[in-house]
Amino acid sequence: MKVEDAGFLGSTGRSVNCNLTIVTENWILFGCVSTGSQNGPMNPGPVTLTRIWVMPAADLIERIRPTKDNGVVTPLLDENCEWADKYGDPMAGMVNGGLVPVCGDATITIRMLEGDLNLDCNVDVLDEQAIAFRYGAIFGLLLYDQWFDLEPKLTDFDIDVKDLQFVFGRDGSTCQSPIPEQPPGSQP
Image (cartoon, rainbow, N blue to C red; front, side, top):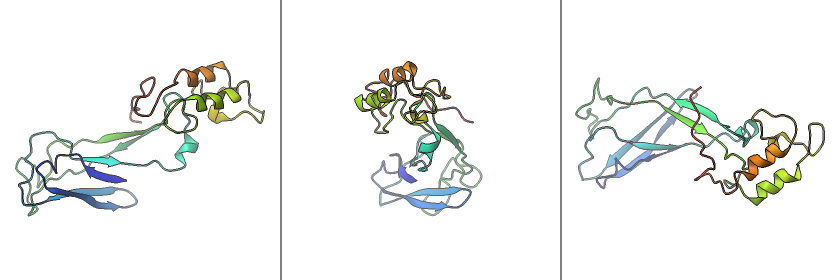
């Protein structure tokens, strides 16, 4: 996990350190501190303070496939958002000893790009060749591999024209610009 300033804390030219992270078995506590001779930013209302970058566990590749609406949705519960000045005193407008008035939970969706069989964030001829090679394979044959059985979402134990259409129809899709759109999943 990596935590970084989203631009607000460093907006006045102060240096920002977001390496204050404590990880336990049940929770992760992180914080950011800005320092410098300039005044810190004032509270203009709702702002994004940080960005959190997470990497999925390696075994996730074995639990999901690049099929429609794949992914794992994980809620992030926010229990305390605090904002204080350099002396640790609550900033103006905070409630109950420094708690930010509006501090919401978030949801992270970890997905694979639909149709990206070689996981390079690009659906191209390599993915199309990989699925075409297995065309006609059924469960029980050595050529059959559940990874390539994309349509319907729950496997039907054959690699047929629906599976080929699923990949070929997403030709040119990338992680930055998926075809079709891949919105985040809903919270479990």
